[in-house]
Length: 228
Image (cartoon, rainbow, N blue to C red; front, side, top):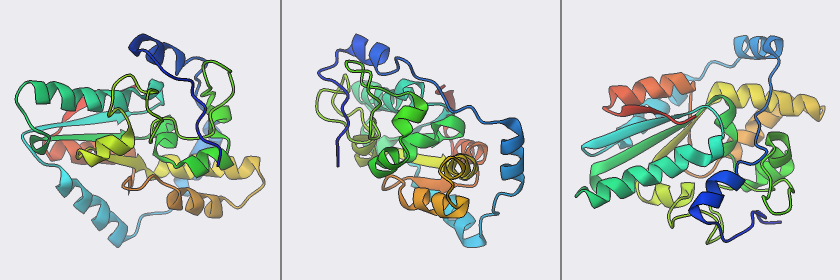
C-alpha cells in the first residue's frame, strides 16, 4: 500500500503552516444531516456499557479532554503531546496524566485507518495534501507518520496511545459521513458504516456522540479544551 507522501523533514514552523495548507472540511447539506441523524441507530445496551466503562481508563491527578470538531492541522493531537511534555517537565510522570481526545463533527477522519483514507480518498475530499507536491495524502497523516514529519518525536496518535492518551470518535459523525461516502459511490450506507467501524485505528473507542463523550470525560475530572 502506498504510504503517506507528506514531505519531510518539517520544521516546527513549516509543519503548522504547510500541513494545513489548502485544508477544508466536508460540507454536509442540512437536509441530509437531519434525515440521517434522526434515523441513526440507537446503540445497544452492551455498546453503551462498553463506552461508559472506557472512561474508567482515565487516571492520574492531571486530566484534560480535547474537543476536536475539525482536522485543524492535527492540533488536538499536538496539544495532547504538549500536555504530556509540559507536565513531565514540571514534575508529573505519564502515570499521573490523561488526555482524552474526542473526534466529532468533521474530525471523524482522524480516527480512521490508512486503508479507509486510501479507499475513500479522504485526503482529496478533505483537501489534505502533500505541501511539496500538492497531491492529496493517501493515509492518515497523524496515526504513525514517518520520522521527521511531526516537529517533535512522539507527536502521533500511535505514540500518544502508548503513553496513555485516549481517543474516541462520535458515532453520529461516522453515521452521517459514511452515508455521504456511500451515496457518492452508490454503495449501501450500512455496509460502508460497518467498514469504517472495522477500519478504526486500533484503540479508538466509538461513543454515542461527541458531546456525550465530552460530558463523560468532564464527569471523570477532565478539564475542557476546545481543539478546533
